[in-house]
Image (cartoon, rainbow, N blue to C red):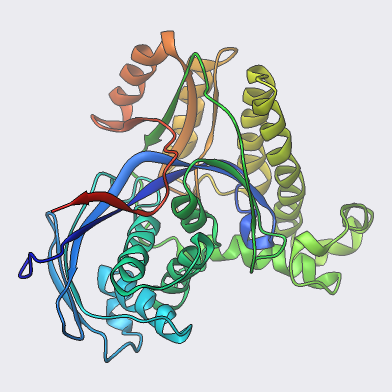
Length: 379
């Protein structure tokens, strides 16, 4: 960094989604947790209108804050994140300014642990901390989502950024997306390891598949004159199944998944708050089977020969049946699964999964009580 005066340190965690697969974009509920892998920035104002960042292992970047127009060629790059977050701050009347920063991250890219959302929350916290914006955790999440939706063309909901911004383990209810309700869940998973398995599939060309999940659910909602499935009465939906099939059976099945997984979120939270681990694990498996059969986001329809997620789920069921739980993780189609592995089975599970998916494919994680924040330490 060019300016070592007043350097401050910021951090933001990755996240895991435990329940509520593709429910957030329908104003539903999710069960999500921040994790102990974080992105970190050391940053200081530089007195210019430029943000200059060095990324550990990924070179350097410079963004002109006087030009916050979306750059199509930069979609999905770190530049688009910085420019998008800065644009949200400026559009909402918050001060921004140039800074120099060095950024490093423990969160594996493409691992389904929301490395992008963590960087978005991190950059928003840097702007907030260095230039005095009075904004909440949910505002920080919105800034990140804005960068994702508008500057990277990714139609994500608000779950990833909210989980990273708030920290901890929470039920997040998006009934009012302008003011989601965030309610802590108390769970320690005693006797179990939380593991995300990276199957090695690429997310590069899956935006249209992600978007189709949301779009098809919205088609069902539109049939009832509503914008989102959260606003559709479940009884009305089921009584109207014959007349809904003109939308395509997959759209109907995806709506069924929404209604059932949205309810499962609270059931899982209640089980954890009551220390009923077996019920919780059974519900994790139910959620995963719903994603496989109804949401249908476990492999890409255009590449049916590539089914790393399905293989990982099949292996997990064989290894953990009667003892743990497993489900697709995050957006799906490629990437990762989530498993709850009994402590005594950790080594065997890791050995068998690593044999198929390679060294480093198993990430054993802990819940991080901290969200995006400025650290106390000074440099």
